[in-house]
Amino acid sequence: MSNVKAAISVLWCLFAVVSGSYYFVLTNDVQNLEKELAQINRDIEKDIRDIHILEADWSELNNPERLKTLAAQYISLDFIKPEQIINYSALPLDGEVIGPSSMFAKNSKDLRRLVSSER
Image: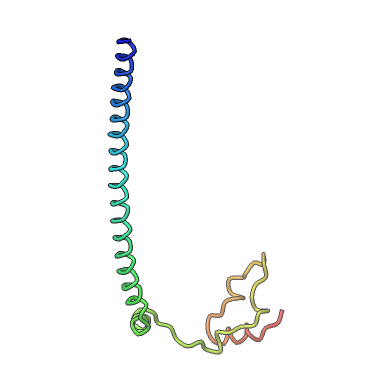
């Protein structure tokens, strides 16, 4: 009878050690996951702040008045002159070789000739 009591006592002690070890491992895993979750939440908050900053920068950079000033300062665009518009028939077809002087206008007189030319 004492052997049975000793065996039951050993089993209960073994069960207590195994369940205690499992509890320790489980709590350690939970703490690691909570740290990871906290880090992810901090990263999300940082990304949200960065997005707000980038949106503010974007709205400032795309200000129409600013773009108009920069375009006037750095891009010298003029209005299209009528001589710059040509007929579709004056454009080369696919695979057609363009002659060095026949398709390019050197002055407005040549451009008028190209515009009025028919193929």
